[in-house]
Length: 102
Image 1 (cartoon, rainbow, N blue to C red):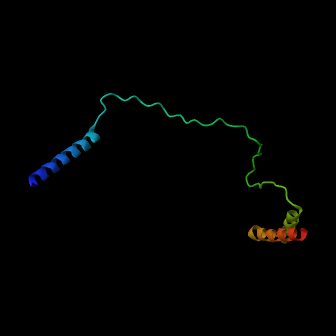
Image 2 (tube, one colour; image 1 turned 90 degrees about the vertical axis):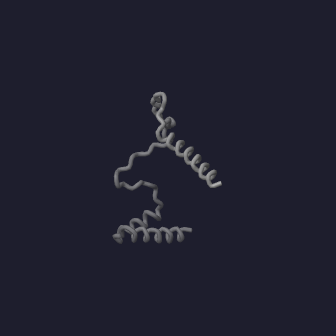
């Protein structure tokens, strides 16, 4: 009985080892033609729906400001506020100005 188990294990080992070796050492029987290069296809460019002027480096995007926003910006300028304190002041100022308006 042990002999049968050993023989079966040896047969399985021989089959798996030969299959592994066959994959590792197989050479192509015929030369393989080089593959054609893969060309990526991109959709045709579409015309832009709106023209956008290029921004100068560091220039802020110009948008229409409300009168409240302009007044609060002017007030922040007179107070010499910059950075986060200016943003915080303007938010509070604009909120108060729009609340008075309503």
